[in-house]
Image (cartoon, rainbow, N blue to C red; front, side, top):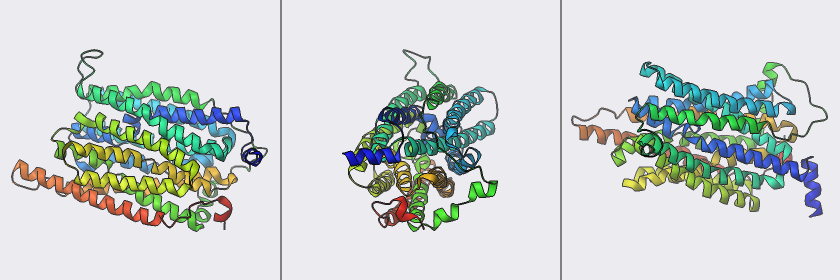
Length: 446
């Protein structure tokens, strides 16, 4: 045990109390993001709103695409705010921007403006959420790297992504009641679109405001000396070649890009609800998210326990395997069994956390922020897969002379997009198997 304590002291200069405070704050703020997940996890609700606005499948995938396009933002932010003392103010600003953009979305939905304007602001909301959440997650991982010992990271991830999704279940049920008017008899008058969607976005405002306050309470150890900010090109892009030149990190990045590209199928899965269940996606969006986050909560707790007892690669393989299961289930399951595909996808979405943790294990302390920012760039190439899935589906739209024939053709379009997503995820899993089980910074440096 003495050796363990000496190792912890060498990797984290803070005492036990400060470390526990930091990991609890990471878990609580992650939980708040889960509570506001109906409007922060761009996919189910956004696709349902697009369906209500009667857009095409390609347009319905744009908010999720905008979310992922903003993934390189941590690179710019890491250059603008390179010092450890900036960790807290940047995270405060990220959560404040989330509160602001959700307020803006709620207001625009209530204004008498054209549908195109509402869709444009919805896409903008997806972009701002993508940028702010990506930066916040990257910086929160740096908090774990700087201000929590490696021995406690499994506990931190287990709390954040195990207990946190329990709050997402609450948020999902409330969103379902809002979208279906079930709150009417005892709390609110029956709300139809767009008022129900506007109320949903407005609910995210105070939640993210609280997150902004809590982000100011982290304890970050001061660094004795830090290098000055480099010039723009060197500061933003410098080191990226070295990062990718490391074989383990390069393969991990390929795995992340391919698997996350497959995961953008979730918007199409939401739209496919009408073909499988015969109801508008908004009628069951909250139930889909409930199943999604209930499975994520259970899986998150188990994966935190598994990480503490096995190795970083196991979490990557388990979550990617669950993603493949999710898409196959959506493709093959009949009737209400289809909803379980969102449960598998909820658990699978933890892939992003565990592939990031894998790369964190490869990161030298002095490069943690940049390596985490480079890791977030993996989302950018994956962004366009969502539009591809929507485009594939729209190629089948309108086929057939009767309504039934057109519906059957559209269903085939969704199924074709699911098959393509399965190929993406399957190739990613094959590459993940080739990763070393226990990477470390010393072995990955060239």
